[in-house]
Image (tube, rainbow, N blue to C red; front, side):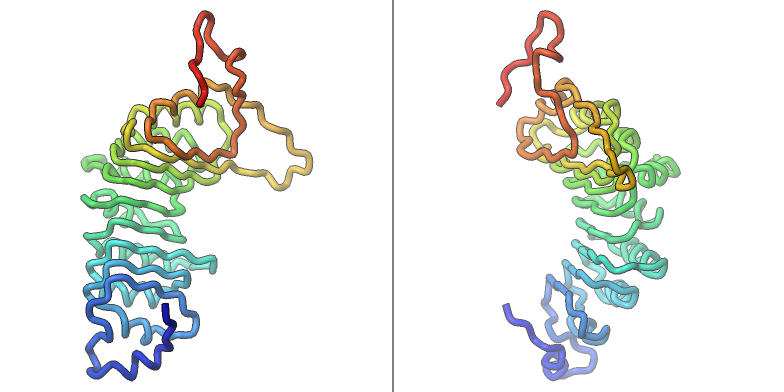
Length: 269
């Protein structure tokens, strides 16, 4: 892979309005030295994937003006992004009928969520909106299916019960991975989530579940939460292709303590 200064592209641009690489399909833009005009040298109507670790409203506006066929929009940044960026990104999303994957560092507006929820080929959603936001948008207009084609759902689940309520609205039969962040340790919520996954998701397709619990850094003497009973975990055993689970939870795997009277729990593997 070669890294070429933008002045080289400017020298190659033989017509003022002609793109340097008219057949470019994938662009990863992480330069902090190049200006917005340099980026526009590479944007074309044929671009399908755009990835960037550095973002600004002007960049999003350029994508909106030039790239109507984007299938993947991957923008992750640790820099603070204000309301202008949120508005610009949401406006761009609404203009992309072919979008299949989005990874966003900011929460999207209701209009953008509604648009994404109705796309026929939408596969991966990674946004900081929590499940309550998604439910609220759906309740405002429940006449259409919501994210039924999702393969990966990666979002903030501040309330596990809201995630449980979201799954029946989506019924994502193609879902292979569920990733939640900032999840409270609620035994009832965890068990209900696992049960709803078993009801809504394909037992052959679903492969991975991961969530991170909230941590109280102000507590200088944290008390270890009680162990989750093994019965909570057993609900996931219906997924024949499940190969990864990552939890900030502790389970009591002593079968003898949780086995119903006169019954066994089978063998662990």
